[in-house]
Amino acid sequence: MKTERDFQFAVLGLIDLNGLLARIAYSRGQDGMVFIRLALAFGGFVVMFISDSFRFWMGVLWRCLKGKPCLLLLCFCLPASAQLEAKKKSIGCLTGVTIQPPGPFTPTNISGIAFWWVAGDNTVNAAVTNWVDRIQGSIWQNGDAAKRPTNTSSGVHFVRASSTQLTNSSLLAGDPSTCFLIFDMDAIVGFQDFLDTVPSSGAYAIGVNSSGALYTFTTPTLRANGIVPAGAWVDAVIVSGLALGGDTDFYTNGVHSSTVTGSFETPGWGCLGGNSANGFLGAYLRELIIYTNTALGGTDVSNLHYYATNTYSYTP
Image 1 (spheres, helix red, strand yellow):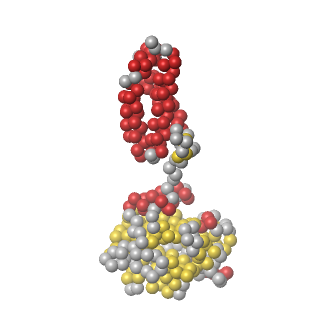
Image 2 (cartoon, rainbow, N blue to C red; image 1 turned 90 degrees about the vertical axis):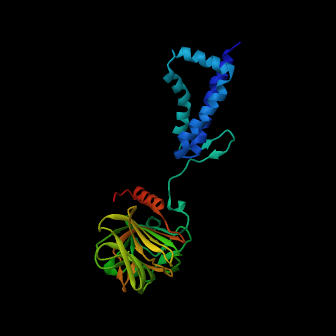
Image 3 (cartoon, rainbow, N blue to C red; image 1 turned 90 degrees about the horizontal axis):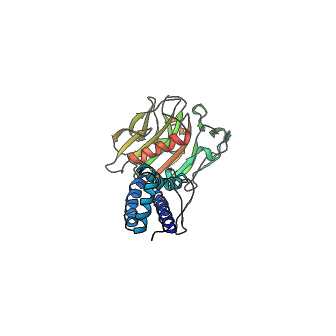
């Protein structure tokens, strides 16, 4: 004989199972959530449907709702919707284990990150004395106070006319390697280096030329492509393939500009902001990231572009 208690257990069991399915599906990430949840829900519903009590009381519920399937479906879905509304909070499973929802993309999600400098880590409206990277603690600095760039709310500002630059003992780039920059050029004039191997030589360099194209220079070869404007924020990726047989790829704002034959193999980077050999930099620099022994591809580059535009709220 069916009782009200049977009905309560049946409905509560349905709600608990649905809520658990929602939690499991969300913990697996957004992409697979719909498929996982539907698959689990179907299996659970079949198991419950073979219960005589469940069939009986679902029939009672059906009659109470006047046979409207949409209302029955609503009763099934509402508890799960409440679960998903709390997606930014920790989700406690029945096991007592706390599952954190998937977080946003950051550059550290890509393997091979070796150095990461963020202008926001420096004191605003002050000369940059020690710009420390977030990965290994490597430092850009300048002992000459008159030649130090200034950190502003828009980024570290390198002034071409003042020959500002920062130096390092030399950062190993690896083979292959990838360089990611977020910057805004003051003007497109002459050759302006972001990175050089040493403060007084332009034998190896990454920069922007007088046509506004990104370039790499490995004596005596200049490779250039990917036009960037002045007075606008740009995120750029320069990928150097293997030293033997590799190529150089240029990306601007997440878009592949070109592949140029040959790689810009370098012994390392020891200067940021240009030098007298090639040309000093005039630009605001928000971030510089170097991935060593890693040649990033389209998906990673797109993710970095998404990160840049969302972090700094600009539209290319």
